Length: 238
Image (cartoon, rainbow, N blue to C red):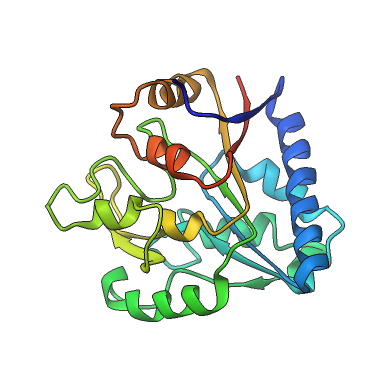
């Protein structure tokens, strides 16, 4: 049996970006109405740029919102490869600049050396999340949870992909990217009652369909969709 997904298909990226921004903004407003604040974790990369720009235009009491990356490369925020930079340049503009930003990057030589303060901050100030928007790579990774996670028998795969756990963030390395990274784990991501997966292009959709239709799949996106305590919402366009 394929995994359940609440699928929203669009004709193009611009229409998708606007619809997703409106849906996420409604989640944020609901969280603020419920408890006075909202927390959202957002993915980087090239795909979400238009969505993040649209989200910045939405009517939300941004001063009550905490924003953090789902993951980030271990590069300073001035780097073009920094997800923090992406969020600052797209989302944190205009009224949305009033949001509190919680970086995963620290000015430390390695993510491992900064893991403890990141763990403490995420656990105490970011969780539980209200909204998470995930992306997916063509290799089936989500956040910085790559298929080769834990290939060195470090146990990181079990920690990163566990649906429940006490470790909200991990320092990870992958053979598929030049920089080490800091990432939220699935147990942290799954604290959000609203979970979105945003993908574009037929190739990524084929990877996703293969993962959700094959119970033997070991791709991280399979673990993310299978373990989620809520039905994930898929926003995609060809």
